[in-house]
Image 1 (cartoon, rainbow, N blue to C red):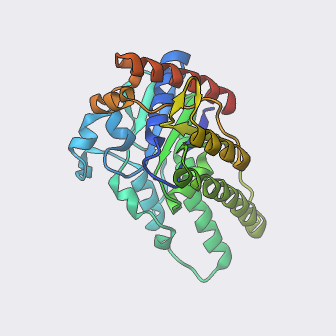
Image 2: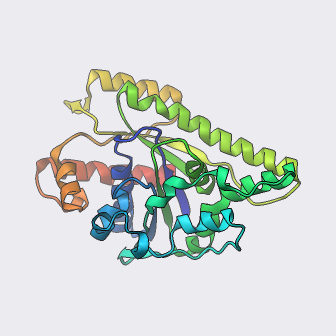
Image 3: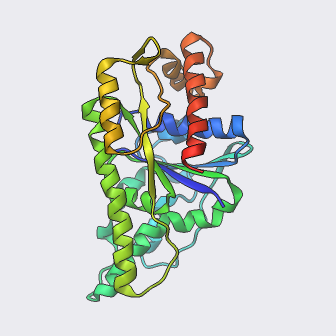
Length: 294
């Protein structure tokens, strides 16, 4: 059974997709893990575009995407029978992707059919939380890890990501504006866990669910000097450590990752001193990831 990890953040531009992409590649390439990447972010390109160029080139044309998470939510909204089938694309043998769909931006519990029965309404809310988990339940025996890249906001689809995840990590820039959202993410994980307990006790319906754990923040685009973080970022790192767990390893700012993004390739395949440094950092980060999300 796969370990499912959600990459979540309240703020965009903090390196969340970059972290998810490189950890997925590192787990596959350097640790022989079978990995499924689920793109639940509906921003243009996203992690799907890093793996498959046509996702960016045909963005907005959803006809080529096959069956996506969007269709699974639509089945629930229309009261149609729910099926777990989705279209999986292979990037390399052992690393697959469920690509994103821009229509995921429309996902909302407001579209659920309503009833006058409180118990039935709670069960519908539960089923909304369970959509992604329902899809992954059929797939996770094929993989060691499922990594879910989410949209940077607190939303109904994020709550479904949190429900489906065994662990969550939050990539973040080490500045106050970016890292302040970590507390919000930790609180939302607690909210989902609490809502599930309330629905279980209130409806009398028993179902398998283990609370989602927050494995830690991941420092991204960090600046360091002489082997340590610069003063302001070291202060922010320590503040985050008081908020919740934080990874020991972090990723520094530099041209290696920018060159990799332009080439739509992992930084492991880019040459140059900075790329070599960031490659080594991501390899160490992947090793820590395996320890924190076993």
